[in-house]
Image (cartoon, rainbow, N blue to C red):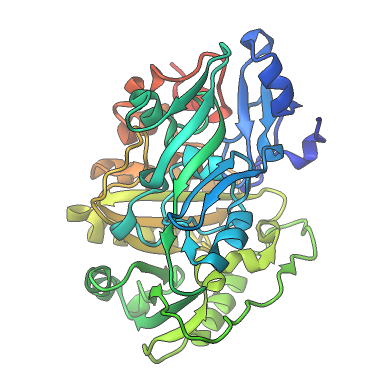
Length: 437
Protein backbone atom coordinates (compact mmCIF):
# COMPACT_ATOMS: atom_id res chain seq x y z
CA UNK A 1 0.00 0.00 0.00
CA UNK A 2 1.48 3.33 -1.05
CA UNK A 3 -0.26 6.68 -0.70
CA UNK A 4 0.63 9.75 -2.76
CA UNK A 5 2.60 12.14 -0.58
CA UNK A 6 0.29 15.15 -1.08
CA UNK A 7 -2.27 13.29 1.06
CA UNK A 8 0.18 12.80 3.92
CA UNK A 9 0.47 15.71 6.30
CA UNK A 10 -0.70 17.26 9.54
CA UNK A 11 -3.91 19.16 10.14
CA UNK A 12 -1.89 22.33 10.55
CA UNK A 13 -0.72 22.12 6.94
CA UNK A 14 2.74 20.56 7.32
CA UNK A 15 3.53 18.07 4.57
CA UNK A 16 5.67 14.94 4.57
CA UNK A 17 9.04 15.30 2.88
CA UNK A 18 11.27 12.51 1.59
CA UNK A 19 9.00 9.97 3.24
CA UNK A 20 8.23 6.38 2.25
CA UNK A 21 4.80 4.99 3.09
CA UNK A 22 4.04 1.36 3.76
CA UNK A 23 1.16 -0.78 4.92
CA UNK A 24 1.23 -2.16 8.46
CA UNK A 25 1.02 -5.68 7.05
CA UNK A 26 4.28 -5.15 5.16
CA UNK A 27 6.06 -3.73 8.20
CA UNK A 28 4.81 -6.52 10.47
CA UNK A 29 6.41 -9.05 8.12
CA UNK A 30 9.73 -7.19 8.12
CA UNK A 31 9.99 -4.71 11.04
CA UNK A 32 13.80 -4.48 10.98
CA UNK A 33 14.89 -0.84 11.45
CA UNK A 34 17.83 -0.85 9.02
CA UNK A 35 15.86 0.89 6.28
CA UNK A 36 15.38 4.03 8.35
CA UNK A 37 13.14 4.99 11.27
CA UNK A 38 9.40 4.36 11.10
CA UNK A 39 6.35 5.99 12.65
CA UNK A 40 2.69 5.02 12.59
CA UNK A 41 0.41 7.51 10.81
CA UNK A 42 -3.30 7.48 11.60
CA UNK A 43 -5.65 10.10 10.21
CA UNK A 44 -3.27 13.07 10.31
CA UNK A 45 -5.25 15.14 12.82
CA UNK A 46 -2.24 16.17 14.90
CA UNK A 47 -1.62 19.85 14.23
CA UNK A 48 2.17 19.78 14.09
CA UNK A 49 4.91 17.34 13.17
CA UNK A 50 4.42 14.66 15.83
CA UNK A 51 2.67 12.56 13.16
CA UNK A 52 5.37 13.11 10.51
CA UNK A 53 8.72 11.43 9.90
CA UNK A 54 10.65 13.38 7.28
CA UNK A 55 13.40 11.31 5.73
CA UNK A 56 11.96 8.11 7.20
CA UNK A 57 9.00 5.81 6.76
CA UNK A 58 5.33 6.10 7.73
CA UNK A 59 3.20 3.06 8.49
CA UNK A 60 -0.27 3.97 7.22
CA UNK A 61 -2.29 2.44 10.04
CA UNK A 62 -5.81 3.28 8.84
CA UNK A 63 -6.06 -0.17 7.22
CA UNK A 64 -6.18 -1.66 10.74
CA UNK A 65 -9.85 -0.77 10.91
CA UNK A 66 -11.74 -3.66 12.51
CA UNK A 67 -13.72 -3.69 15.75
CA UNK A 68 -12.65 -7.02 17.22
CA UNK A 69 -15.01 -7.33 20.19
CA UNK A 70 -17.77 -5.30 21.84
CA UNK A 71 -19.47 -6.48 25.02
CA UNK A 72 -22.78 -4.62 25.18
CA UNK A 73 -23.27 -5.62 28.81
CA UNK A 74 -19.98 -4.34 30.20
CA UNK A 75 -19.12 -1.66 27.61
CA UNK A 76 -15.68 -3.13 26.96
CA UNK A 77 -14.59 -2.73 23.34
CA UNK A 78 -11.46 -3.98 21.58
CA UNK A 79 -10.58 -2.52 18.20
CA UNK A 80 -7.67 -2.24 15.84
CA UNK A 81 -5.51 0.85 15.88
CA UNK A 82 -6.89 2.54 12.77
CA UNK A 83 -10.56 2.53 13.73
CA UNK A 84 -11.87 6.10 13.67
CA UNK A 85 -13.60 7.46 16.74
CA UNK A 86 -16.43 8.40 14.36
CA UNK A 87 -16.95 4.75 13.44
CA UNK A 88 -16.83 3.70 17.08
CA UNK A 89 -19.46 6.28 17.97
CA UNK A 90 -21.76 4.99 15.25
CA UNK A 91 -21.43 1.51 16.70
CA UNK A 92 -21.71 2.10 20.44
CA UNK A 93 -23.91 5.17 21.00
CA UNK A 94 -27.11 3.50 19.75
CA UNK A 95 -26.51 0.74 22.31
CA UNK A 96 -26.21 3.16 25.26
CA UNK A 97 -22.43 3.53 25.52
CA UNK A 98 -20.09 6.45 24.95
CA UNK A 99 -16.31 7.06 24.98
CA UNK A 100 -15.41 8.32 28.45
CA UNK A 101 -13.04 10.91 26.93
CA UNK A 102 -13.27 12.43 23.48
CA UNK A 103 -11.24 15.20 21.83
CA UNK A 104 -12.78 18.01 19.78
CA UNK A 105 -12.90 15.97 16.57
CA UNK A 106 -14.25 12.48 15.96
CA UNK A 107 -11.93 11.98 12.98
CA UNK A 108 -9.02 10.66 15.01
CA UNK A 109 -7.99 7.03 15.20
CA UNK A 110 -8.30 5.14 18.47
CA UNK A 111 -4.54 4.53 18.54
CA UNK A 112 -3.98 8.24 17.83
CA UNK A 113 -6.17 9.16 20.80
CA UNK A 114 -4.12 6.80 22.96
CA UNK A 115 -0.72 7.83 21.60
CA UNK A 116 -1.52 11.48 22.32
CA UNK A 117 -3.46 10.72 25.50
CA UNK A 118 -6.10 13.19 24.40
CA UNK A 119 -8.29 15.10 26.81
CA UNK A 120 -11.79 16.47 26.42
CA UNK A 121 -14.23 18.89 27.98
CA UNK A 122 -14.58 16.59 31.00
CA UNK A 123 -10.99 16.36 32.18
CA UNK A 124 -12.05 17.48 35.67
CA UNK A 125 -14.27 14.39 35.91
CA UNK A 126 -12.70 11.72 33.69
CA UNK A 127 -9.06 12.70 33.17
CA UNK A 128 -7.42 11.71 29.90
CA UNK A 129 -8.16 8.98 27.38
CA UNK A 130 -5.41 6.78 28.79
CA UNK A 131 -7.20 6.38 32.14
CA UNK A 132 -9.81 4.26 30.38
CA UNK A 133 -7.52 2.05 28.31
CA UNK A 134 -7.51 -1.43 29.79
CA UNK A 135 -4.92 -2.99 27.48
CA UNK A 136 -3.09 -2.48 24.20
CA UNK A 137 -1.04 -4.58 21.83
CA UNK A 138 2.33 -3.19 20.78
CA UNK A 139 4.71 -4.51 18.12
CA UNK A 140 8.33 -3.45 18.52
CA UNK A 141 10.90 -3.17 15.74
CA UNK A 142 12.71 -6.25 17.05
CA UNK A 143 9.60 -8.29 16.26
CA UNK A 144 8.24 -8.55 19.81
CA UNK A 145 4.44 -8.50 19.98
CA UNK A 146 3.58 -7.40 23.50
CA UNK A 147 0.39 -7.05 25.50
CA UNK A 148 0.63 -3.98 27.72
CA UNK A 149 -1.72 -3.15 30.59
CA UNK A 150 -1.48 -1.64 34.07
CA UNK A 151 -0.31 -5.04 35.37
CA UNK A 152 1.39 -6.40 32.21
CA UNK A 153 4.52 -4.61 30.98
CA UNK A 154 3.37 -1.63 33.06
CA UNK A 155 6.34 0.64 32.28
CA UNK A 156 5.84 0.24 28.53
CA UNK A 157 2.09 0.72 28.98
CA UNK A 158 2.75 4.04 30.75
CA UNK A 159 5.24 5.12 28.08
CA UNK A 160 2.90 4.27 25.20
CA UNK A 161 -0.01 6.29 26.61
CA UNK A 162 0.88 9.79 25.47
CA UNK A 163 4.08 8.46 23.86
CA UNK A 164 3.25 9.93 20.43
CA UNK A 165 3.73 6.60 18.68
CA UNK A 166 7.40 6.33 19.57
CA UNK A 167 7.33 3.09 21.57
CA UNK A 168 6.30 0.84 18.66
CA UNK A 169 3.30 0.08 16.46
CA UNK A 170 0.03 -0.02 18.41
CA UNK A 171 -2.08 -2.69 16.69
CA UNK A 172 -5.13 -2.89 18.96
CA UNK A 173 -6.67 -1.17 21.98
CA UNK A 174 -9.15 -2.32 24.64
CA UNK A 175 -11.20 0.58 25.98
CA UNK A 176 -13.76 0.80 28.76
CA UNK A 177 -16.79 2.80 27.60
CA UNK A 178 -19.26 4.56 29.89
CA UNK A 179 -23.05 4.14 29.91
CA UNK A 180 -25.30 6.97 28.72
CA UNK A 181 -29.09 7.18 28.77
CA UNK A 182 -29.43 8.95 25.42
CA UNK A 183 -27.57 10.30 22.41
CA UNK A 184 -28.27 13.88 23.47
CA UNK A 185 -26.83 16.49 25.79
CA UNK A 186 -28.42 18.97 28.20
CA UNK A 187 -26.40 22.09 27.38
CA UNK A 188 -26.39 25.45 29.14
CA UNK A 189 -24.90 28.57 27.58
CA UNK A 190 -23.68 31.48 29.70
CA UNK A 191 -22.36 34.77 28.30
CA UNK A 192 -19.65 36.34 30.46
CA UNK A 193 -17.94 39.71 30.38
CA UNK A 194 -14.34 39.01 31.41
CA UNK A 195 -11.81 36.56 32.80
CA UNK A 196 -12.84 36.95 36.43
CA UNK A 197 -16.32 35.85 35.46
CA UNK A 198 -14.95 32.92 33.49
CA UNK A 199 -12.94 31.55 36.42
CA UNK A 200 -15.91 31.93 38.77
CA UNK A 201 -18.32 30.21 36.37
CA UNK A 202 -15.83 27.46 35.55
CA UNK A 203 -15.15 26.63 39.20
CA UNK A 204 -18.86 26.43 39.97
CA UNK A 205 -19.67 24.48 36.81
CA UNK A 206 -16.97 21.86 37.31
CA UNK A 207 -18.78 20.85 40.49
CA UNK A 208 -22.13 20.33 38.75
CA UNK A 209 -21.43 19.47 35.12
CA UNK A 210 -19.46 16.74 33.40
CA UNK A 211 -18.43 18.92 30.46
CA UNK A 212 -17.27 22.54 30.54
CA UNK A 213 -15.50 24.80 28.06
CA UNK A 214 -15.46 28.46 27.03
CA UNK A 215 -14.97 30.35 23.80
CA UNK A 216 -13.11 33.67 24.14
CA UNK A 217 -13.52 36.66 21.85
CA UNK A 218 -9.79 37.16 21.33
CA UNK A 219 -10.24 40.45 19.44
CA UNK A 220 -12.29 42.19 22.12
CA UNK A 221 -10.37 44.95 23.89
CA UNK A 222 -11.09 47.70 26.37
CA UNK A 223 -14.02 47.01 28.66
CA UNK A 224 -14.91 43.95 26.58
CA UNK A 225 -11.53 42.30 27.04
CA UNK A 226 -11.86 38.61 27.99
CA UNK A 227 -15.53 38.31 27.16
CA UNK A 228 -16.83 35.02 25.84
CA UNK A 229 -19.41 32.28 26.01
CA UNK A 230 -19.30 29.41 28.49
CA UNK A 231 -20.77 26.03 27.60
CA UNK A 232 -21.54 23.34 30.14
CA UNK A 233 -23.43 20.10 29.74
CA UNK A 234 -24.33 16.69 31.04
CA UNK A 235 -25.56 13.69 29.12
CA UNK A 236 -29.33 13.97 28.75
CA UNK A 237 -31.72 11.47 30.31
CA UNK A 238 -33.78 9.18 28.11
CA UNK A 239 -36.75 10.95 26.56
CA UNK A 240 -38.65 8.24 24.75
CA UNK A 241 -38.30 10.26 21.55
CA UNK A 242 -35.86 9.52 18.72
CA UNK A 243 -32.84 11.84 19.05
CA UNK A 244 -32.64 14.79 16.73
CA UNK A 245 -30.05 14.33 14.05
CA UNK A 246 -27.33 16.95 13.46
CA UNK A 247 -27.23 18.77 10.15
CA UNK A 248 -25.47 17.44 7.09
CA UNK A 249 -21.69 17.80 6.97
CA UNK A 250 -20.69 20.64 4.66
CA UNK A 251 -17.57 20.83 2.50
CA UNK A 252 -15.16 23.74 2.58
CA UNK A 253 -15.42 24.52 -1.11
CA UNK A 254 -12.09 26.14 -2.00
CA UNK A 255 -8.36 26.17 -1.34
CA UNK A 256 -7.78 29.92 -1.01
CA UNK A 257 -4.40 31.32 -2.08
CA UNK A 258 -4.26 33.46 1.07
CA UNK A 259 -5.60 33.14 4.65
CA UNK A 260 -9.29 33.88 5.04
CA UNK A 261 -8.68 34.32 8.77
CA UNK A 262 -7.75 37.95 9.46
CA UNK A 263 -8.80 40.74 11.77
CA UNK A 264 -11.68 41.86 9.57
CA UNK A 265 -13.22 38.45 8.92
CA UNK A 266 -12.67 37.31 12.49
CA UNK A 267 -14.37 40.35 13.99
CA UNK A 268 -17.39 39.62 11.82
CA UNK A 269 -17.33 35.95 12.76
CA UNK A 270 -16.96 36.67 16.48
CA UNK A 271 -19.93 39.02 16.40
CA UNK A 272 -22.09 36.50 14.56
CA UNK A 273 -20.97 33.62 16.76
CA UNK A 274 -21.55 35.45 20.02
CA UNK A 275 -24.95 36.81 19.05
CA UNK A 276 -26.03 33.40 17.71
CA UNK A 277 -25.63 31.79 21.13
CA UNK A 278 -28.76 31.65 23.34
CA UNK A 279 -28.98 34.49 25.83
CA UNK A 280 -30.88 32.36 28.33
CA UNK A 281 -28.82 29.91 30.39
CA UNK A 282 -31.78 27.52 30.52
CA UNK A 283 -30.79 23.94 29.62
CA UNK A 284 -31.40 22.89 26.02
CA UNK A 285 -31.52 19.35 24.72
CA UNK A 286 -29.21 18.99 21.70
CA UNK A 287 -27.59 16.12 19.73
CA UNK A 288 -24.23 15.09 21.08
CA UNK A 289 -22.23 15.72 17.90
CA UNK A 290 -22.69 19.53 17.69
CA UNK A 291 -21.64 19.78 21.33
CA UNK A 292 -18.50 17.66 21.12
CA UNK A 293 -17.48 18.21 17.49
CA UNK A 294 -18.72 21.60 16.26
CA UNK A 295 -15.93 22.06 13.70
CA UNK A 296 -16.45 18.59 12.24
CA UNK A 297 -19.60 19.93 10.61
CA UNK A 298 -17.37 21.55 7.98
CA UNK A 299 -15.03 19.19 6.14
CA UNK A 300 -11.50 20.50 5.52
CA UNK A 301 -12.13 23.68 7.54
CA UNK A 302 -8.36 24.05 7.94
CA UNK A 303 -8.25 25.26 4.32
CA UNK A 304 -9.47 28.65 5.58
CA UNK A 305 -5.96 29.34 6.86
CA UNK A 306 -4.52 29.46 3.36
CA UNK A 307 -1.49 27.72 1.87
CA UNK A 308 0.70 28.47 4.90
CA UNK A 309 -1.58 26.42 7.12
CA UNK A 310 -2.14 27.18 10.78
CA UNK A 311 -0.12 27.06 13.95
CA UNK A 312 -1.96 26.09 17.08
CA UNK A 313 -0.69 26.90 20.55
CA UNK A 314 -2.02 25.13 23.62
CA UNK A 315 -0.59 25.51 27.08
CA UNK A 316 -1.45 24.27 30.53
CA UNK A 317 -0.93 26.72 33.40
CA UNK A 318 -0.90 25.81 37.11
CA UNK A 319 -3.91 27.30 38.85
CA UNK A 320 -2.10 29.82 41.11
CA UNK A 321 -0.76 31.60 38.03
CA UNK A 322 -3.61 30.83 35.64
CA UNK A 323 -5.72 33.98 35.84
CA UNK A 324 -2.86 36.45 35.34
CA UNK A 325 -1.00 34.37 32.75
CA UNK A 326 -4.07 33.88 30.58
CA UNK A 327 -4.69 37.62 30.64
CA UNK A 328 -1.08 38.36 29.72
CA UNK A 329 -1.21 35.92 26.81
CA UNK A 330 -4.47 37.27 25.46
CA UNK A 331 -3.28 40.88 25.72
CA UNK A 332 -0.02 40.03 23.97
CA UNK A 333 -1.91 38.28 21.17
CA UNK A 334 -4.22 41.27 20.80
CA UNK A 335 -1.27 43.69 20.69
CA UNK A 336 0.48 41.55 18.07
CA UNK A 337 -2.45 41.93 15.71
CA UNK A 338 -2.73 38.18 15.20
CA UNK A 339 -6.22 36.76 14.67
CA UNK A 340 -6.97 33.57 16.61
CA UNK A 341 -10.06 31.90 15.20
CA UNK A 342 -10.24 29.13 17.80
CA UNK A 343 -9.65 30.62 21.25
CA UNK A 344 -10.67 28.11 23.90
CA UNK A 345 -10.27 28.28 27.66
CA UNK A 346 -11.10 25.62 30.21
CA UNK A 347 -9.96 24.21 33.52
CA UNK A 348 -8.09 20.94 33.92
CA UNK A 349 -8.75 18.84 37.00
CA UNK A 350 -6.22 17.00 39.14
CA UNK A 351 -6.93 13.56 37.63
CA UNK A 352 -3.51 11.96 37.07
CA UNK A 353 -2.91 10.12 33.83
CA UNK A 354 -1.22 6.72 33.66
CA UNK A 355 0.85 8.10 30.77
CA UNK A 356 4.42 9.29 31.36
CA UNK A 357 4.11 12.11 28.79
CA UNK A 358 0.52 13.22 29.29
CA UNK A 359 -0.02 16.93 28.68
CA UNK A 360 -2.70 18.09 31.19
CA UNK A 361 -1.85 19.40 34.64
CA UNK A 362 -4.22 20.85 37.22
CA UNK A 363 -4.99 24.44 36.27
CA UNK A 364 -6.18 26.19 33.14
CA UNK A 365 -5.57 25.44 29.50
CA UNK A 366 -5.64 28.08 26.77
CA UNK A 367 -5.76 27.24 23.07
CA UNK A 368 -5.08 29.73 20.29
CA UNK A 369 -4.56 29.24 16.59
CA UNK A 370 -3.22 31.52 13.88
CA UNK A 371 -2.68 31.53 10.14
CA UNK A 372 1.00 30.87 9.66
CA UNK A 373 2.47 34.17 8.41
CA UNK A 374 6.11 33.30 8.89
CA UNK A 375 8.44 35.14 11.26
CA UNK A 376 5.76 37.30 12.92
CA UNK A 377 3.73 34.24 13.88
CA UNK A 378 6.79 32.36 15.08
CA UNK A 379 7.86 35.32 17.22
CA UNK A 380 4.49 35.50 18.97
CA UNK A 381 4.41 31.76 19.61
CA UNK A 382 7.90 31.85 21.09
CA UNK A 383 6.80 34.64 23.44
CA UNK A 384 3.75 32.62 24.49
CA UNK A 385 6.00 29.63 25.17
CA UNK A 386 8.14 31.76 27.45
CA UNK A 387 5.11 33.02 29.37
CA UNK A 388 3.97 29.46 30.03
CA UNK A 389 7.44 28.31 31.07
CA UNK A 390 7.89 31.26 33.44
CA UNK A 391 5.05 30.01 35.68
CA UNK A 392 5.78 26.28 35.50
CA UNK A 393 3.38 25.53 32.68
CA UNK A 394 3.79 23.36 29.63
CA UNK A 395 3.10 23.39 25.89
CA UNK A 396 1.10 20.62 24.23
CA UNK A 397 3.43 18.51 22.05
CA UNK A 398 0.81 17.07 19.70
CA UNK A 399 -0.45 20.57 18.88
CA UNK A 400 3.08 21.86 18.28
CA UNK A 401 5.13 22.48 15.12
CA UNK A 402 8.00 24.61 16.37
CA UNK A 403 8.78 24.51 20.10
CA UNK A 404 12.47 24.50 21.01
CA UNK A 405 14.30 21.72 22.86
CA UNK A 406 14.49 24.04 25.88
CA UNK A 407 10.73 24.56 25.91
CA UNK A 408 10.15 20.83 25.57
CA UNK A 409 12.48 20.03 28.46
CA UNK A 410 10.88 22.70 30.65
CA UNK A 411 7.45 21.28 29.80
CA UNK A 412 8.45 17.66 30.37
CA UNK A 413 11.56 17.63 32.60
CA UNK A 414 11.39 13.82 32.94
CA UNK A 415 11.38 13.16 29.22
CA UNK A 416 14.62 11.19 29.43
CA UNK A 417 12.84 8.59 31.57
CA UNK A 418 10.36 8.24 28.73
CA UNK A 419 13.13 8.14 26.14
CA UNK A 420 14.41 4.91 27.69
CA UNK A 421 11.24 3.22 26.38
CA UNK A 422 11.32 4.66 22.86
CA UNK A 423 11.70 1.91 20.27
CA UNK A 424 15.09 2.41 18.56
CA UNK A 425 13.43 1.76 15.19
CA UNK A 426 10.85 4.54 15.66
CA UNK A 427 11.21 8.29 15.40
CA UNK A 428 9.36 11.41 14.25
CA UNK A 429 10.13 14.87 12.97
CA UNK A 430 8.90 16.26 16.30
CA UNK A 431 11.05 13.94 18.41
CA UNK A 432 14.23 14.68 16.51
CA UNK A 433 13.55 18.42 16.72
CA UNK A 434 12.87 18.65 20.46
CA UNK A 435 15.60 16.26 21.56
CA UNK A 436 18.33 17.73 19.33
CA UNK A 437 21.51 18.48 21.21
